Image 1 (tube, one colour):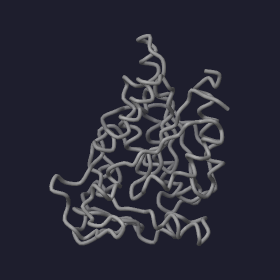
Image 2 (image 1 turned 120 degrees about the vertical axis):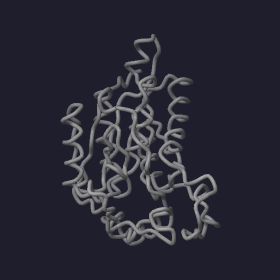
Image 3 (image 1 turned 180 degrees about the vertical axis):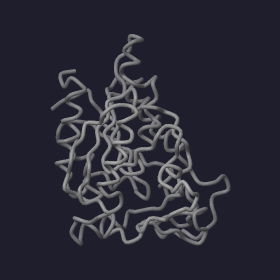
Image 4 (image 1 turned 90 degrees about the vertical axis):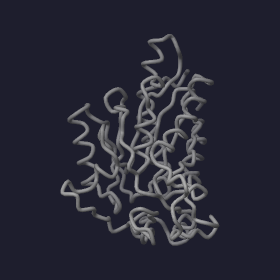
Length: 280
């Protein structure tokens, strides 16, 4: 299958982008180009951890502070502009976990297909597909969205902080239980070795892409990091404000790009097929 469609995957926190290579390769088998740029908030080379092959998460923050959502957004925007402005591609943003923020924030109106078409231009963002992703409301950050309103900060059971506490780096606690459930021991060991760390994300969402783009959500039925009931609550709350998401389901843990790769691709392309013409 040949297509003018391109996919940009916004990966989750604590991840090296190479963990999504099976998903990129699966799209390629369908004739679809997919890209998963490394986001700065999970890039060990930007987190002042010493030797990135043996990171020390107890070191102090970089002199200029940790990267935040703004830096992640700039990375995604650079790929979007290359594909859209230079190549006139139609682009579907795919967001996993904490990558929901970067995908939504990057989907600025001037790069959306409908807006570009009104100016006589071709190509643009056609929609956003979220899976096991955090849906951040307009005017909120990941931190303010998922912390209690009484100000008492809660640390989820899968997250651990190091010497500098919440002012430092967080990493995934027991990833084999919370992140890679559903994978065999050999694959878990492989992908666990590629996990990184991330600071708390405090950036406020200012792009209301939910209102102007078609959105879909793949609920992960066996997710232990973001249980399905919370996924459903996030989608329902946003749908009340800006319209319904197209909903899919998968009997997967938090990492279906590794455990249910082909199924994820088929569902994403099903959504995309309703948004773009494959003959273009």
